[in-house]
Amino acid sequence: MIGYGFMGAAHSQGWRNARSFFDPPLRPRFAALGGRNRDAAGHLADRFDWPVVETDWRALIARDDVGIVDICTPGDTHAEIAIAALEAGKHVLCEKPLANSVAEAEAMAAAAETARARGIRSMLGFTYRRVPALTLARRLVAEGRIGELRHVRARYLQDWLGDPAAPYTWRMSRERAGSGALGDIGAHAVDITQYVTGEWITGVSGLTETFVRERPLADGSGGTGQVTVDDAAVFTARLGGGALASFEATRYATGRKNALRLELNGTRGSLAFDLEDLNVLHFHDATADTLTQGFTRILVTEAEHPYLDAWWPPGHGLGYEHAFAHQSVDLLTAIAEGTDPEPSFADGLRVQRLLAAVEESAAGNGVWTAVPTP
Figure 1: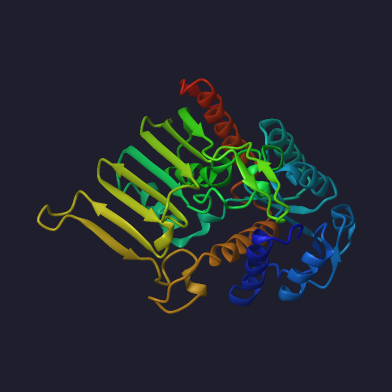
Figure 2: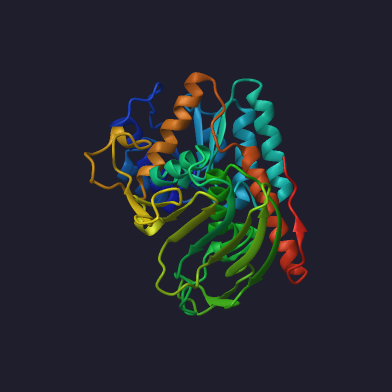
């Protein structure tokens, strides 16, 4: 694994739980942790029993005992590391968004397709696909339970930048992060919309805004850093089947900590989900008796629900970290079975093109902008 921050810890926990609670056809073994800061990487390595720390990612990829490379670094390094790993014959799991630009994403998708011909697998870490309630939502849509889709409302709301004195981080630099709320959390809203509905977004009209353009450096030096990414993005969209959609991504929604919300309205019913209540899916069946119609609160903790048979008895909820274990198990299973894991780098490229379309639209004051589709 390359990266030792927030995502490094989340992925480490996911790999560890994949072998502790599941019985995947391949058993993951921690080989080496990569990070430029040896002390910081060493701290994570000690916590999760990574036996070796490499400060050069090239040395990690060259190791004979490494079969999977898990990339948990900022977006500006994804393309170089992923392409090198694939060319070295390593399977790759890469955190989202795929890259910082469409050109980088195209190169990564091409490298993944070339590697695929040699049996080398790659997967993108849109982990929320593995939240059981959202996996169940996809199943219900595919079964026709909400009928023909009419509306989608997708929002990812956080508030960690609401204080203008909050320190500057790499996530506020276009050079390192690619974009702000749009790519960091808006990409998740886009992916789960396309995943759950099974439809591609074909066009967008968007606006972005940077509310605070300069922030204090975290080192206490008194200096400041220039914020060169968006703080918030809103856009409307049309899906391939004709449904209308609205999206919002912000890190200024005071009081909302990690509210990824999705609502679908169809001709036969509706579905609603909120990540801050992630064990619950709300379902309205419009074909039921009108005397008893209403949203049903489904507690997604039964053994029959996706992924749940490996965990706890019904009613014992899962948390944020569990989806990372599901992600690891799915990748291990695909590698063992010789199948293509999802989401693919090609899926990530499509999301990257959509993000670029939103930025293009916002630069034109919301002009309608087509999104290239497969």
